[in-house]
Image (cartoon, rainbow, N blue to C red):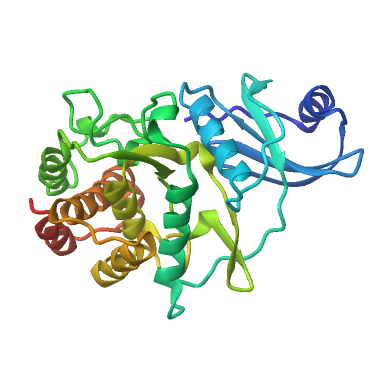
Length: 304
């Protein structure tokens, strides 16, 4: 999918208008669902400008981001709202010291990753204060279409028109049926809890990024999604069954309560939807992040 791209001159003009200073130096540029540009302004400030196509949920995600920063959660401070740039919409946030990825192989890594998510949920604004918005497709099992798969986020293809892998569609149907009609309370959380989006310094949380992936879902679903992906972006790849179970156990300890049987099943189902969606989306690129045997065990734990 096309990502709006701004050149240095356009970013400089945008910064002058919305931050009061043009840029003097480009520090880095990355691009996936957004163009992310680190810049040093003429007044000496280091900021990140994020350019992306308009989506209705961006305003709610920004409100969540801003509320969590105000509550003291480790995330960059937003410096602007959403303003047009290069055919898309841009916002700016402070550039935080990078920190590093905490190795998932560390003995206490599941506890640290899980406790940080529990802190986020605890500090987040109440779900009923956020303007409703759809979650990202990798956690959008309750999308309104009669089709099995929602439109993907980063490829221009209809997943429902692809018959391969043949075994994954029945898995996804079972998961979607298990998660349909949930009445569990909703909370605000982060729906891309991968190691690559979290930074640590001296073993302590330094920054959580990617707030366009905020979501309002049952707590067990957010924890389950995170349990299925928390090691992603490292040499470990996605977590296996035992690493997912360790995360879920650690999350419940950090949250100070044990999940009900329903919540445990919802956790495993939500995580499996994410992994199934990623396989459906990327299998033609050689992605193999879920095997039939692992899917069967995750289905069993989901009560499907």
